[in-house]
Length: 125
Image 1: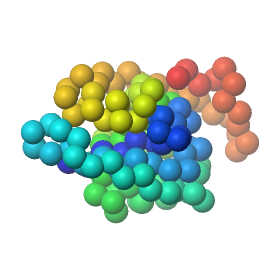
Image 2: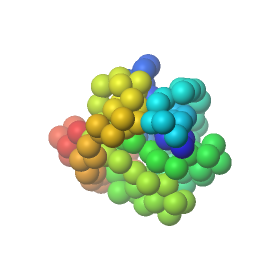
Image 3: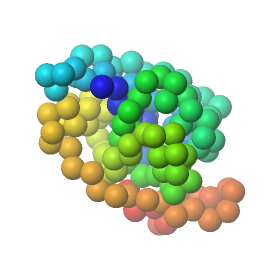
Image 4: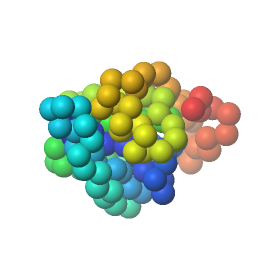
């Protein structure tokens, strides 16, 4: 199974739409992380369908995020990707928690207003 986590220098990026890179994590049938590969998505920020298509084309099945807006959720889910919410901390730790069945998804959705939104207090990460 392959999962994706928005990456910000090894930590889960709390602003999905601003992510310039994603960690693609391969998990084997024994629930072990066997590979973590960070790939650039520079230029796709706030392009929900572009990010979703990119991740789908990489073979990703599940996307684990910190904070995310409804448009991004819709873009991912419309491509058949499952979205899990509320991740924080190191990407590696989050991936291992998921692989071992310890990750608990907590729906965290950002409500953005306007094209040039600022996260401020509107996102509950």
